Image 1 (cartoon, rainbow, N blue to C red):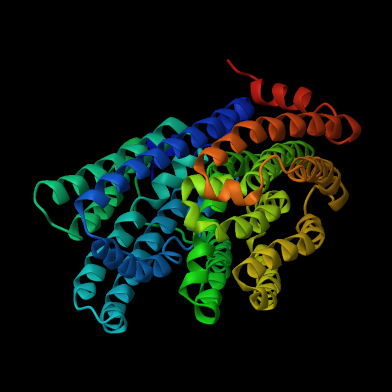
Image 2: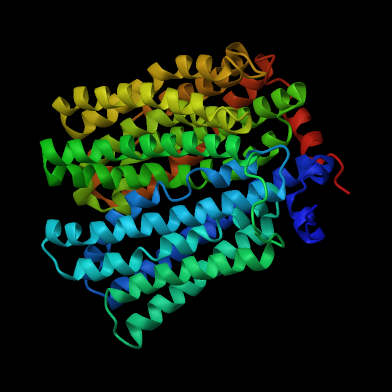
Length: 510
């Protein structure tokens, strides 16, 4: 019988996590959000500096090349990293098998990208894209080589190591990019070098911090269900990628670049606060729920409390964005982008429901039901595409409104379908979500109606925009907190939420 090194055995074990699962989950959420904020600030600083060192053409060229590698990259992981995170029991052969599959997929997709390089150069009529795509494609197998090590760090909730590598790799990549642009004047190759450096340092760091090492696979049997899980998750990600690009394609094709410009700028503001919360919290919550997958009662309680927390945060973001849309557009984009404010208004309405909807993915992933997740995504995407098509007649703002409407239409069917084979019912989910969402919508309506400043003044004057934010934001926050507190008191499911969450987060702290 083949012996596995003790360090590798320890890296695969997750039994110790259940003793202080709450504390690890809480610290994971806090560290993840803090890391995301730091990453955002680093990216803003990096792009501000590179914008002064490079020409717009350089950024455009890399963006064209990235459109090829980003699409192929959707399939690179094949969902195998999440399969490792989700598994209740894990053995060395299974992880080794997934490692070699990740690596093989990385090299195959690199070759596919290389084959697409001449087509990209021909499509954009720029010979430089050929070499640029060939070089950027190297990041695909480099990232794949560290995918399982990163997954094991996440599975074992080693948050400082996980996010330390993320920050360190970005810093190294940014440093290389700035040096190549500033000192050696490499132009657009500086951006490509930054990408490769970030990928390389990240993979090396993950190998250094995870003691697990791959070896020859003696038995592939254990990897079959993990592969099936990953294939369905990868298919879901592909469908999700398509529907997230469809609005841009439709607006650009039918309405033109000007309308698309207003839409994409509003969308960038819309996604910014969400990206600071949804992704980081999912990183912490999914491993915790996966550890509880065989303990139905504990899983149900933990899921509903986590769902309540993200819904509270999501509704706060939605209320703030809706009420402050016009001044935010003025301050962040300038008065000439006033048309984006209406689009941001409509998009922000979706966040009330889209945040709890995204939590349905935690059910599918933690309970190993990615086949059902993929099936739901086909139906939901068809509905969203139909809504986009209907909204086009009213321009970019019509597409935004149609998106928000269809998200509300999908809410109850999504709750029903996700809960059918879970230890939680549609009623549990609805009783948790809707009182909080109702509080958010009421506070938004109350504070949006009184016109303290006219929309035209806020859109034209940065000074008025700042005044509007300084007055309105505390009002939104205060009223929302009061109404959410009342909703939690009135709702039996949410009553005592804090009293349940605090013990969960502090259990076995020592």
